[in-house]
Image (cartoon, rainbow, N blue to C red):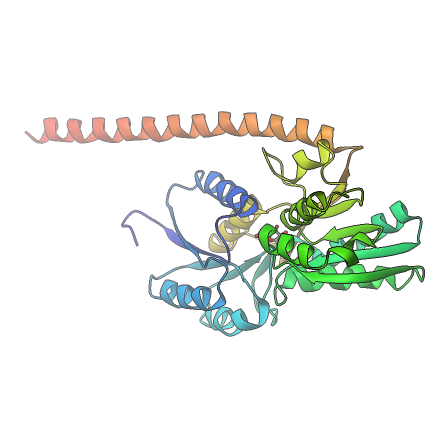
Length: 325
Ligand code: FRU
């Protein structure tokens, strides 16, 4: 622990290098810039359960005051996260969950609702009748399990809609692309495809394009703003729609700080979602550009404050030296 820091917050991230999680990390850093006396320790498990377990073990030796964790897969990560909780170190689970429910707070959208919303939207597009292809995420990650649950639950009420092919894309574009290549005929026989994130949706899109027929509407999840991300692909018409899945970086830090400072906080912090399609994608993109601009402004102001503090501190030391001599 650095001398002047009041608290140490550790963040164990399941995967670090995709755009959605980079956005989450940026949000966290921005939120943390308002608490200069909090030390932040970050570990990226690169999509590997064993790595993540080991990294959390190591974090426990660093005298952390709170753990934020996005568990790669629920079952394998449960024992270690439970043991952190049982050591009375507060745990904030974000986006994905463990399977025990032992945490102080959850921050993220409700993935079962996202699955249900996707099914409802699909039903509307297909007018309650047709064949659906689905591409799931990593088998054991709670976000995939819950999205599938919600989707299937809704489908139980629409007897003329069927899932005719289900592929596992592990949340990755390349993996979804290869799976789609392998099962091209089955995919081409569907009326609509839902991939559990936009990256996998783009992988499927690429495979369909290469096959020469890419008329089938493809839906994803995330609708992340920014160049090359889901939202842009909806405005360009590459993707048909996406369920907004906010990263919750800001809320995760705010919740962590509330817990540490013993302020009131909620156990379930459910972030909103909505369908983004060509009706509202343009407006969303405009709004997010605006927010982006304002955030740059905030960043600049924060930097100025840090710089002023530095000058102030160094002037104080000079003054002390002068007084002392
Ligand atoms: C990013 C991601 C998102 C998805 C989420 C599910 O790593 O795959 O695209 O919505 O994780 O946990």
